[in-house]
Structures are given as structure tokens and as C-alpha cells.
Length: 230
Ligand SMILES: *Cc1c(COP(=O)(O)O)cnc(C)c1O
Image 1 (cartoon, rainbow, N blue to C red):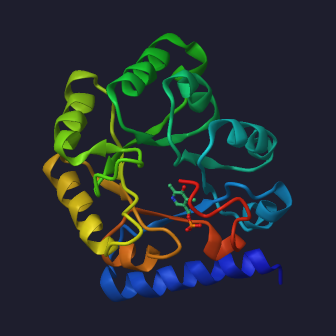
Image 2: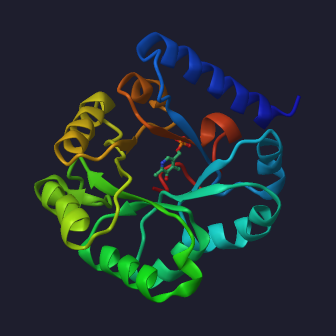
């Protein structure tokens, strides 16, 4: 069997086993297959197997790669990398979910385009706020001290429907602490879904009731352009 497809099935199997152990009742964690830096021929076997949810971290790369694939396959494409406000329109055209909203300017721009561009008006989106749970200066996401206020502002003042919260724990810390922080914040702000967990910790994220995990290298192998391209 195709190696990538084999890895994909293995990840699903492990997810299922972990779910049975820790949360036997639905809703179950959804897998986002992270395809950044990988090419069509590596992704197509998974598309053909019927998987629909994918993640990319760069707007331009995703647009080029996914335009033709989306014409052929049913796809829900998530932006999981940083979003600049001048790329918001292209991001809305390219993606079905944006996981990395982290400041007012970007949130306002999203609302502006949703309200003014007819081509976007019958598309349905999932919006997530990225929270910098480790308060790391080099990382995107809103800081913990502003997170609650920002989430409530998006929901109540801007009327931007927020589907979930997303985090990327610091590499050198126990991720469960950060999954806990994100879960608490989601509870406090009545947000239903979370996106947390990657190749190194997706099973731990499932144990912590993640709604989505984002897995790349466990499926496609190591990326040649560096693993820290977050
Ligand atoms: C690349 C990336 C992932 C996937 O990372 P792996 O360790 O390869 O599973 C998950 N989330 C974000 C935000 C990423 O940029």
C-alpha cells in the first residue's frame, strides 16, 4: 500500500483507540491532515480515501496548491499559520476555516469582507481564535492577558461567530498544561471547539478532549523545509 496512506490509516487507528479509552461517547476528535510543503501526488491518495479536512500554514501556497484539488474533491481547508491583514481577502477565498485570528485588525477585516463581498456571502466559515497560551514572544496568537477580552469582543461587539480556540504549546513544556488552559478559556467564553495537538502530542490532545488535532509529519514524514515553520 501507499506509504502515506498507510501512515494516515495508522494515525486514525491510534486516534480511535485513544478516543475509546478516554472519551467513548461522541463527539469525537477530527483529524486535520496538515499538507504544508507537500505536493499533490503525496496528498491525492488521502483525498481519494475520502478524507476531507486539511490544513495549510501559508495563504499563497495553499491557494496555488488547492485550487485545482478543490475542484475535484470535497475539501474543508483550514488556515493554521499566521494571517496578515493584507491577506485576509485571499484567505477567505482560499480557506473554509481560519484558525489564527489573533488581533482586532484581522478580525475587523474579516467582518468587512464578509459584509461587502458578495462572492463570500454564501460560503460558510469556521473561525478560530489562536491563543498564545505560553505567552511566547515569537509566536502568534493573542496573549493570555488579553485573550478573554479579545474573544468576547469578537463574539459580542464585532458579531464574528467564533467556532473554536486554537493553540500551539511551547515545544519544551508539558503540552497538557496548555491544553488545560485552552479548555478552561473555551469554557469561560462558551466556545465549543478546540484545535490542539500535533504529531508529537495528538494522542495527549485527544485525552484532553480536543475537537481537532493537526497532524502532518506522522503522515507525510519529515518536512525538508524545517519543522518549526509555525
Ligand atoms: C505544521 C503544523 C502542524 C503539524 O505539525 P506536525 O508536527 O508535522 O504534525 C500543526 N499545527 C500547525 C500550526 C502547524 O504549522
